[in-house]
Amino acid sequence: MLIEFKVEGFKNFEKELIFDLSKTRNYTFSENALKDGIVKTGLIYGINGSGKSNLGSAIFDIILHLTEKEKLINLYSHYLNLSNSNIIAKFYYKFKFEDDILEYEYQKDKPQNLVSEVVKINNKLISEYDYLTNKFKLNLEGTENLNKNLNGNNISFIK
Image (tube, one colour):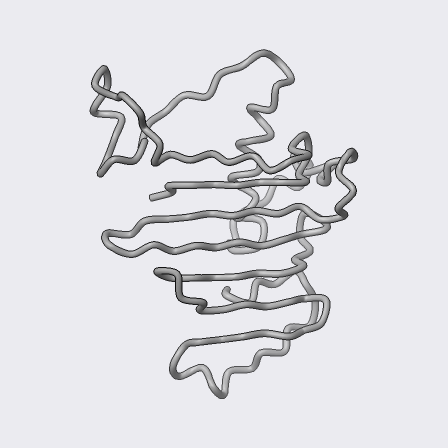
């Protein structure tokens, strides 16, 4: 279950936006919207042009490089924020699977071009890959002989 999402430098998100589903405050009016203290059902509202659709696109950006599903690349035109001096977009996801926490963060300069990727499980670094230098760290037993040479930056190291 997604418990936290951060985005920066993507579309209208010039500065870091934190979307934290674990900060529930007082949900006594709708306890069925929570699961294990995390919002599982919610609603995002705002005036036209405030970024609701872009937040959805940002959250679903992960499918562009981790799945083989059909991709609607046209939704990702004007990918980077024009006001941000960075030339990359940053994404961070925190998931909870029973008692384990998985953190996945990556940076991109185009919709399908990865710049870096990091995976942590329970605060332990599992994988880190820098696509600009092709340098990596991999802390998984049994991966010593794995081919780690990625020819290009549109294939996820963890995929």
